[in-house]
Length: 178
Image (cartoon, rainbow, N blue to C red; front, side, top):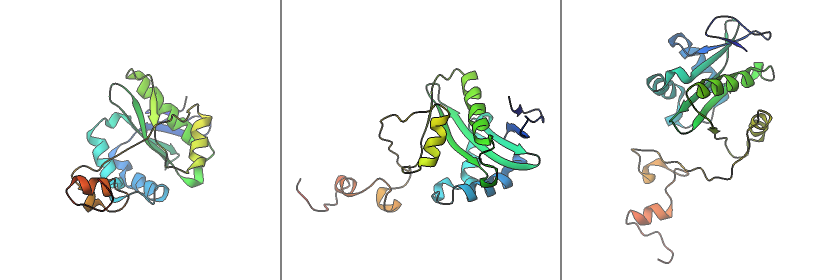
């Protein structure tokens, strides 16, 4: 297994350990490069602060030497485990870093009693879907829905989950038969 929280590395030189405060700048920089299109509510600073407050023991950093090579953020609600975000430096991909991070997160989740892990991939991201398929994940026919809390659909803009049905519900008629 990859060196974990011990400072030892596997044959490829990858060491995985829990996120520590000193990782914040390097992880933020990595996430900005790997997830350039994330919305403001998913900024690295916000995600890191929130994860440090809830299940920080499920947030891992992979290093190759002194370089942050990747991260995985996972969680467990007592029913399902989740891989929320996996990021690997583009220069260090195809060296086993992503696989090692996923397996490490799975092991940590299993240690908590988790028997199933879910994750979400943005539609059309076939390269990432293929990566997870190679790790044994499969597509489950589900519709994933989300809503920003504390933001009305009207304020959130296009693609935020509002639309005509929400405006009609809010008392604004937008046309069409009732």
